[in-house]
Amino acid sequence: MAKIHASFVFPLLVISLINYHIFRVEARHLLETTLPEVPELPKPELPPLPKVELPPLPEFPTLPKPEIPTLPKPVLPELPPFPHLPDELPKPTLPTIPTLPKDITPPQSTASP
Image 1 (spheres, rainbow, N blue to C red):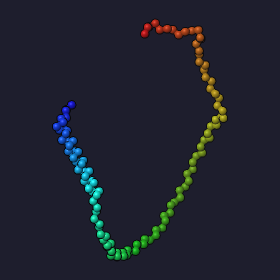
Image 2: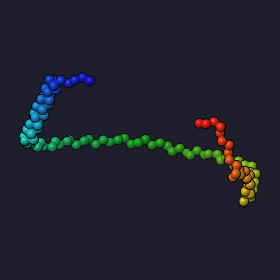
Image 3: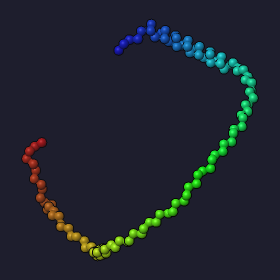
Image 4: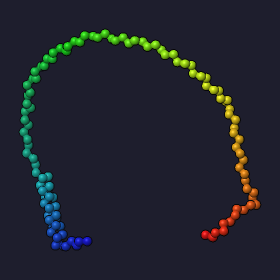
């Protein structure tokens, strides 16, 4: 890591402190000064705008409404009846799970860990 020499840092520190002091004095000077009064100028009067007359809109003839021919209603075949399901369905029987007797022990592995 590069070393920063004091001969380089000290002048920068002095310059920044001087600039801070100068800015503070200038800001105080701006606060203490008063602005000159600006005279009020008379409001200008605008000339009246000319009135624009637009030509009348052209009239279009009314068009007769087109007649839409009526289409014959298609004849659909009858749907077959839906098969009737009973209100209650029988419950399925599940096979029983065989259980091991309590006195049988599982075989032990011969390999040692």
